Length: 354
Ligand SMILES: Nc1ncnc2c1ncn2[C@@H]1O[C@H](COP(=O)(O)OP(=O)(O)OP(=O)(O)O)[C@@H](O)[C@H]1O
Ligand SMILES: [Mg+2]
Image (cartoon, rainbow, N blue to C red):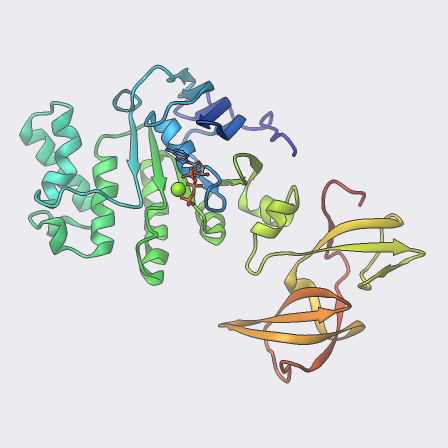
């Protein structure tokens, strides 16, 4: 497991970056993280993405001070905050469950963190009104949460977290309750809000395409460890390991073992330029499999219509592959098709030669 290299990252000592150093967290005998390191730069929209149970929520709660860690340090704006409770860390959080007060109006909901801090009522009302207008829910302020839509509720939750002017904004799958269309517009909205406020934001999602589409940088989390940190483009183009390679991309990379010998390969014929003789694990992007002609033949086992493209499932010599085509044309389930792996499309995984 490669240790992420932070040497090139901007320093978190300036502004309100977040740095985690050597974080270990156990629940009883179960270790969630062991010596985890992560650095989020000031003003960045940073996503934590990983499968269920990989520790995303736990990490966010540790940053917020809602969960204690067993060892290591959390720095916000370059200062250690391990000894500070959640209220003293000046972070804003939005969870999947917005937890709005059902009996308070939208305005009272948004103003509530200011009131808790001891602000004068008229100041809290003014600031909450301004924030509601900024987030496009100005006309709903007199209603109760039960009288507004799911998308509006989510904006109330964002407004309530932002009105405190937090140094760091922590979001744990805030849009997962929304339908696909609203989710799509909400993430665009979030990105706009984040840009407007310039606020350091850590966004948790298990949806890799969502993370790639909105983030400045992404951390790929597996079971309690960070597999890779990078820009969406870096992670997509150069996955650091097999876990990342198979998690990222829709559909994800095809991963298989090939044996290279004497300028050719089996069980698939792939371009072997630069590959050493012997066995290696390789990744092949579905879009790099050209169907129609080539040295390989396969059975089409399934076709999945995905709007602009079709995912073609292939089986050849015991190897299952996914290809993506714009036009499935004459392809039929059960039929046979020839194919070639395009030159330059083969990525050696696990630090092998290439
Ligand atoms: N209070 C707790 N007590 C014991 N184990 C816990 C507790 N909270 C979390 N865990 C365990 O820690 C691991 C990480 O959980 P966490 O909720 O952080 O995952 P996650 O990445 O947020 O998952 P999801 O995508 O499902 O929300 C899981 O194995 C979980 O069962
Ligand atoms: Mg979670």
